[in-house]
Image (cartoon, helix red, strand yellow):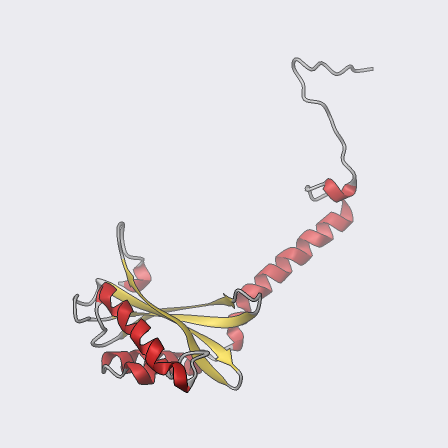
Length: 175
């Protein structure tokens, strides 16, 4: 019979199944496979948004900004009521303090994913990246990200923001 030596060994403690974190047995393996399946299919749910239709919304949004029609761009945003447009326009114009207002746009890359809301709601999302000359910088310094989600029977912009590389190198897809 082997004895426990506290000077050189840690005690062997067995916890009930509810405290076990390892994957053991057929139930553990089944749960692991199910978790992986759910995670992978959840990441791909952005495919339910038609890429062409979402890109048209995103391109139109960027074109409105480039032609200084910010109020019309705000009209393409999710959750903006007609009475709130002026307030949203002020907030979007404040974002231009960071990089300047885009003067044009060149599509660079898109991604799919899920938009998670503070309420716990999730929506499939497509994010589009654009390079642009701005009122402050030449093209290649500032980029813009536009996220598009389904909103009732149409697609809307949910998030927009300027991006600027602070250090390191640009990803290949933005060059």
